Length: 85
Image 1 (cartoon, rainbow, N blue to C red):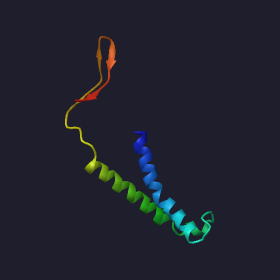
Image 2: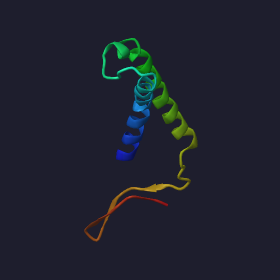
Image 3: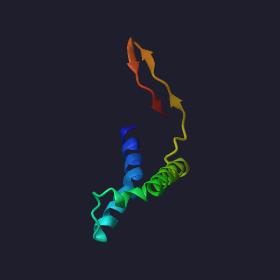
Image 4: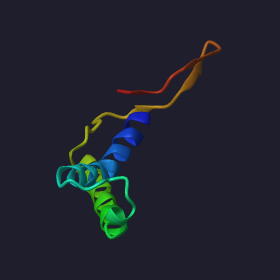
């Protein structure tokens, strides 16, 4: 679960990092507010679109478990974890 959250967070931040690099490349100071104000909405929309596309791609092309899931159970007083068979 942590891996998925980190992946989606990095995908969300990707347009922001690219814009930061663009500001550096064109010789502007990326720490000045006026360079960011006009682009915040577009960067946010691009970030959300990338996250949605990545979630759709994971849903379409992600690993499928063809067998059933066995839930956790008690055997001889011990919890046996659930497994995919």
